[in-house]
Length: 144
Image 1 (cartoon, rainbow, N blue to C red):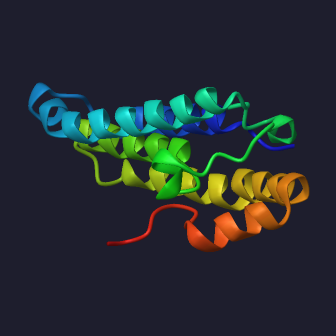
Image 2 (image 1 turned 90 degrees about the vertical axis):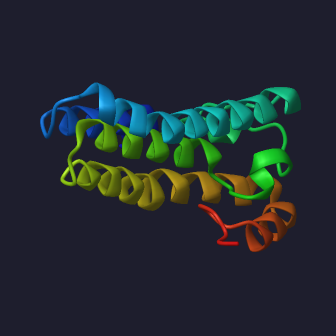
């Protein structure tokens, strides 16, 4: 039984809350990363909604189409990248280097558990089309 990504995100954010206090100057430093993460997440959700397919990571077998354009042309997992960015911004806002450990835990858990299961479901559903997409676009992000 996998914990849904939103649950993993909340667990990681809760762990970060115990590791430092928020302050206005640190919040201001974290704001650009949080904003960029929000834009990335909204763009990804928008792409799925425009395609008329599910955004539910627990029921990926309900995917009706393979979305490969927009932000999904740069990363196969923009919503998870957005959540990892938001957690990183949260660590910055709390002024805690240790706050990056829950970010690493979140990325590891999502990469090894959730994404692996999603990829298997997408391979089964879309076959060669998904294989070509996966060969072209990295899981997280391609360095430029």
